[in-house]
Image (cartoon, rainbow, N blue to C red; front, side):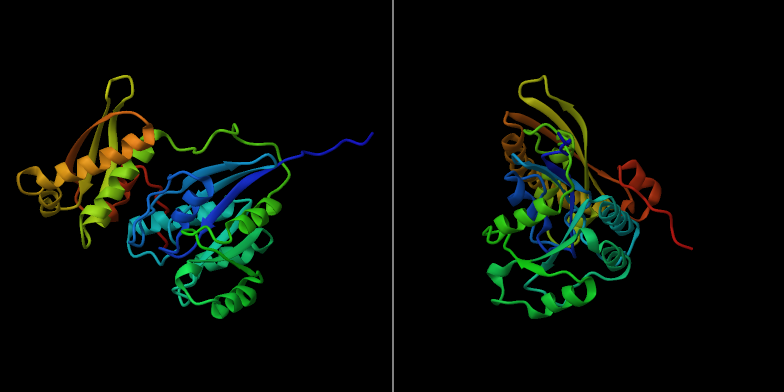
Amino acid sequence: MSEKGPLTRAGHIALVGRPNVGKSTLLNALVGEKLSIVTPRAQTTRDAVTGILTTERAQMIFVDTPGLLEPQYTLHRSMQATAIAALLDADVILLLLDATRPAELPEGDALAVLQRQRHTLLAAVNKVDAAPASSPALESWCEQALRVRVQRISAVTKEGLETLLSALEAALPASPFYYPPDELAVQPVRFFVAELVRETVFEEYQDELPYATVVRVEEYREASAPIYIRATIYVERASQKAIVIGRGGASIKRLGARARVKIESFVGAPVYLDLWVKVLPGWRRKAETLRYLGYPVPESRP
């Protein structure tokens, strides 16, 4: 009797693309849980967020990555490095393109990596519910630049997702599962709490302020009732701190109330959210500060 190989497939699938193509919305739709924060603004995702979908035959470990962009300062370089690392480590790469913005395509280092990974590369045109019936420019570019054909999907309406999942499953290597079947995420709860607070900052404040904001959970007491969470919102300037707090603390109270509802839904328990605001001058551009905040910082090019 001949030995049989693994009966299941498993592996990491990197979701990559330009900012605001819908990677986070797609991750949430595929795993059936809100893991990645979603806002209408570009460059919301800064870290790689992992979500897991397990079926009888396959375990798909999706990695939502920061948007591929030309870096303008140190945080951008960190985000780009995170995305490139996910590309290089993935078993399968799913390149997401935006049907409503066909001219925005990967370029530079990201495109070079994609072209070297053709044997693991799939492509999908997202937001077809908001675009014309076809995307000939995107389809032509994928075939010429990457030698792959595209699928048409909508992460919002879920059009085409079943077909996409079948293609992704077939592309995975034969392997036992990496995680228990009921596991949905890899990052700790603290990470998602900080992300939910940051998402609410994007919703509550305008202009550049959300991009100048980073959130750290300093304390998480799960044994207390309600769960006690102390989080710090760091901004770059004193004027931004004043805006976050608002007159008489009105703005931060509203922010805290909205974020607390999201966190309670996520953890499934009552929460006491204690928010603080501190100034960390120029944190987006300083390598040492970014490392303190937990971001990877690639070495500067000569």
